[in-house]
Amino acid sequence: MFRQYRLFFVILVFVSLVWLVMDMSTVRSYRTTVRVVYTGIDTARYSVVSEDRELPLTVESDGFSALLHHWSWGRNALSVDMSGKLKNARHVAEIRLSVPSGDYREWIQSHFSHLKNCSVSFDMDSLSVTLCERKCRAYAPQLRNVSFVFSDGYGLSGTPNLYPDTIYLYGSEKSLSDVNELYTNASSVDVSDSGGVYQLDLVPVWNEYPDLRVSRSTVKLTVPVEAYVEERRLVNVRFLSNDTTIRVRLYPDQVAVTVWVPQGHSFEDGLSDMKAVVRHDQSSGQTELPISITDFPSDVRIKSVVPDRIQYVIIK
Image: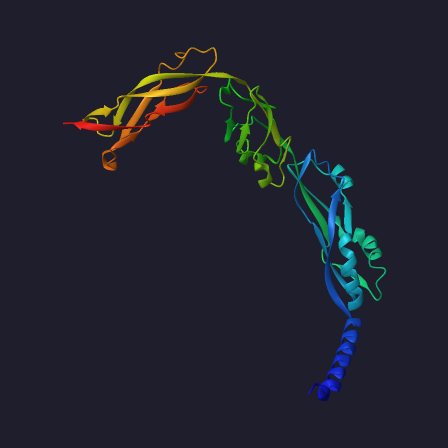
């Protein structure tokens, strides 16, 4: 059966090839773009608010030339020098600079000179970039969502410090007013027994604003460490309820709290106010209540509470 139609398929393929060659040889209009990069802008002083990143072109050419252009043109970019325009610009809050696209006609045409029967026209009369003079705002970086992991017998001594203590953002006044604070990224720090200095990333909130830039995106964290000693004491349990009229008996009414205390500190230093609290809610129907330890210094680490739950009986 194939032999019967073989001649037909050969003729069909030949006709299709002839039609394709004739069609590709016909001069037509093709749309393309050229990438634009701007030079001569003092980015330390100005931020780019908006820019024409591409120059649309209409190219009159045959299909073969257009295809060749498509393969080779992507590597080219039009460099537009704005230094002269910026030098003569009036110093206002927002500066819009424009250059006629026709100034670059010769450069554009030179990149199409290898194409036969080709002409190029611009779809935009000018290329523009809008600049904003940078303002500066200082921020004190905040230590947030950072946990410390210490070896047994060691803990935090004093307050961790961040360096530098000031981070600067540069950009438009409007964008700067939207950023209220800069803070560290969530992380866990394994602290050595002698302490140390650790580098932390800041949450890059400035990336949400294309005109903002930051003086630095990381901070150094200094963690002071000292040896801890283990201490244990009995703490009376306090009963708190949303019904202040009830009386209860707790079993037990004391818990053994084991803590890590900085070496050289008396167990009573700041620990006399430590409390063990249970909270009762009549609607919950709980028969055992969990223990919460409150009012102890921040440099004290709770190791264990025994028991961690207690029973109660309401006295009628």
